[in-house]
Image (tube, rainbow, N blue to C red):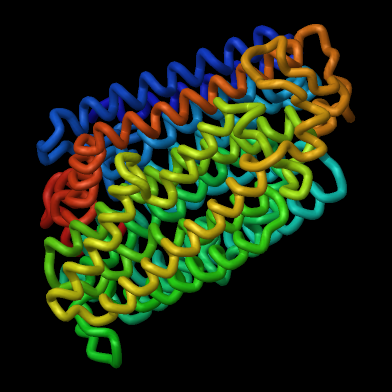
Length: 576
């Protein structure tokens, strides 16, 4: 039993409590929050080193048994290469968004418990990646969502209230459905521990009814699709992303969405794929429960790519475009999973899962970068509408370069890491097509259409907001080239209003950094995240090896069962 497994969870929880206790002092609150963010990053790095390094190895699976109660009777936390991969993304994005928050959120916002809510959201995300049973996955989902409900509503305006209401209602319905599905799975299989569930699905003497389990797994999938923002469950995404503060939106798009993706990979490729279930239907063939979900994955991925892409092209502001882009990009993440789910080749399954993880990692970094850049634009200029922007490439070259790098990453331009992620998606479909796999040709076409749409809407964003002559808002806010804190001449009240201050625009709190300094600091964070994206592109081999190891772990059901249960056959016939 390794205590390193719970280190990230404990650091995030202690930080949340510490920031709650110090929220009356803005300076101390910000310092404690940043220190906790660095501590979380260090804890994840330690866990990553224990599990994944050296690169190219098979990786380890570490288990922590709460109170010493062994699985499946006790609560277990499990950290394997798949968990470590997702936690690494969380650590990077959360630290960047947190640093940005210190500069972005005013003193009144601090006293509204912004930092405790932020860290409790990180607690929920971390618990979701580490939990070893489905019921506690539901619990950690709720911890994550309860914090995000308030953060989406943080500015309390009519638009924010309406967006938060939609977000809350849809997710509460999803949570109720998830709880019903979990209860049904327990009644059908007699366990909720993921490893024990997989063991019972593979054991013919356990007499688990596979068909009802398939139906309940399908109901559960609808909840994960809602969390990930897949079509037709995407309705909450645009309004919630536009309403939330920029660093919160960066976390929602970069990390929180990926919890749904992680749950799909973990449960459907590690657990439910263990069930033997011959499938022989039109466009569906295989010998496991996973084969039923391949066409579902494909339809929802296709719809997301097309609906999100077309929606992004028609938006009139940067945030709207980025929100619809997130819907489209999550389709790219699920598309290789659709190919892998129906593939008979183990190599294609590994490649498909690895492609999905790499794309999720790249999207998390790039989309967080873009939302932070958009937040800085609104803070500096006072608007993000295309008809009032223009010329930002001349007036704010560093900020513009950061946005451009994020866009090029999602378009897939080499040598940025997004190029390799998109290449792996195409390679998965092409390799499956070479083996005459069902639907592989359609997956290639969908990926190509999605790539064209991505180029179209990011080209439009660059041309309207950054290229050409400066628009009226840009001319008024940034009359000269932005080279440092002093050169930004935006009106202080306009800047405050653009940021949607929780105190109604009063940005003159003595504990707040000067607006010009805060804006420059935000640009520095955007630039640092852009450099990170470049670094992962140059050193992509490390990302690929880690993703491949994570994919192997996700597909190694027997290894997961042995790590958690101690022996695959030790609990035959035992009902938790």
